[in-house]
Image 1 (cartoon, each protein chain N blue to C red):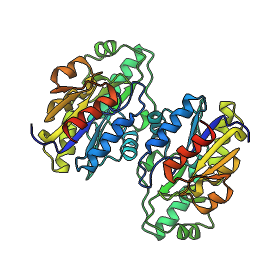
Image 2 (cartoon, rainbow over the protein chains, first blue to last red):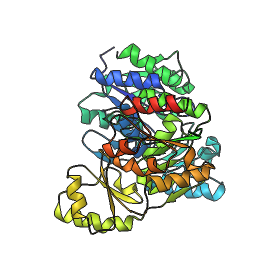
Image 3 (cartoon, rainbow over the protein chains, first blue to last red):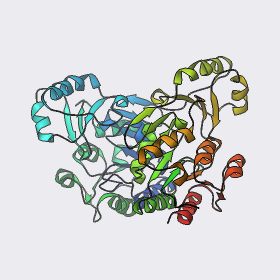
Image 4 (spheres, chains in turn yellow, brown):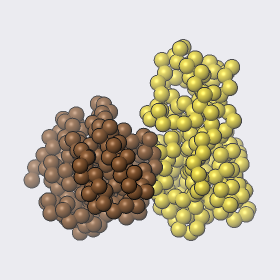
Length: 223
Length: 223
């Protein structure tokens, strides 16, 4: 195992509890990693504005992958990478068949469309099978995303702007939309509450669930 | 002193440290207050999306006053209360005279304009004296705001939608834009790092500064 130079971590379900409350132990571990010179990159399905507030509140300095890779903030620039125009006709078709609703702050989502989990994700996938979109269920929302981008391809760009190789990154996640960024990272960690498919690719599965699991991984591999 | 039924608290400088990192002791105290049935109302100059993320991360349930009162989220509704059209000509005039820059996410600010603190606030106040705007310096940004709204008048609306009288609210702040919401609240607390004018109206000034001060006040008056 090479020495890790940065930590890429999902937010909801990974450094929070199941109700999205931030875990105090995770905050402490993430700050210790920053203090030790190992910056944190936040990797989320949420909008950039919300993710940026998490970065400020915790004190992370590595950049942000938001909207499942569709909108990133590196140390050098903000970049919209996903094409929301691909998502709009898919959303419109789904809306014509089912009573769905976008998540809050949908007007500031730049690259994809997120809807509330009032519909079964398998129904969404089946209904939109002929559209050029990727469907993610993050357990907090269902995302209709441009398939050309994902958390992994966008993490590479953020890492590159930091001068860090993707193989030097410890990645921690819990959900199916974290699969791509775990796959590209040097060291892959799934928290105990993670989806099975994420655990299948993980180098290490934490004993503790949620934010305590993320803290466990950072303590074990970074501190 | 009547029994307090809710806590209204500013974010930056009040439950954070001087670099805007959230204080772990403040998180713990705010969560205990919520658990005890005393909900937290966040009162900030920041945009609603960012404030909402803080509410989710801490787990506050009392509603949000954002944009210095210009945009609120009560338990029943979202309401834009400030008129950004008043602020635009003032900003344009200031911009014609000085090299100023709006803060991040300015395109989602609904009711006011916030600029980076690269200019002296007294210069801003003097330059815009003839415009129908209020100028606030939060120590984190300079805000050009509709004078018809402030944190105090908007807190009343949030409290009303909760069925709580403003006299039953404990208010905690640090900065000059917190003056109006402290003035209307039943119990007024300034953290140790607060501006002098806020300390002058406070019923209690905490011994500890920043987030530890907010935790101290909640422990003293609520828990």
